[in-house]
Length: 231
Image: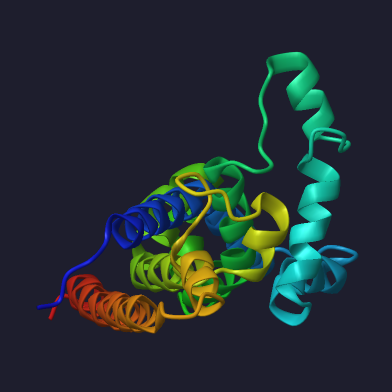
């Protein structure tokens, strides 16, 4: 019988919570950044684009260490948050959500940006000639037509956040019940002799959740595209 131990259930629940919060944190910024990259021209755009995609090309441990330097209790931002509001981000599940959001952000931005770039700009121009302002055009034309890209970006970011390990363990460590997400728990079990069964179960669950996320992403994206095209 396929049963899960309390530790495994805790890791799954924590991973889902961290991933959902990571997506919620990054989605508004992801839409804004994707629109800027797709619709705006400005000096340094290439550099800005490169900075957004840095988490994809550097080791996750590097991102985790940078987050620790910035958001740790003695960091430039983390120290101010702790001294002013008593907020501690490092070594907490909130910190795990931040790390996952940073690592998943480029995937979300890329999916949404491609969707925005596929929109016929003449539709936006027509709305402006009819008196709609930039904000009205964005919410009435651009955002609805970007629906499939947003869905794909959200699911990709969720799947990436669910599997995040390097930045998480560097920034928030492996605290039982607090930061031991699914990949962190799997890594811990792999280091303990005799825990192969538990490790295999977590591997299977990770694969199932990832495939489910991809399947749901495709189904929702198709429905959104059909609704937009009217077919």
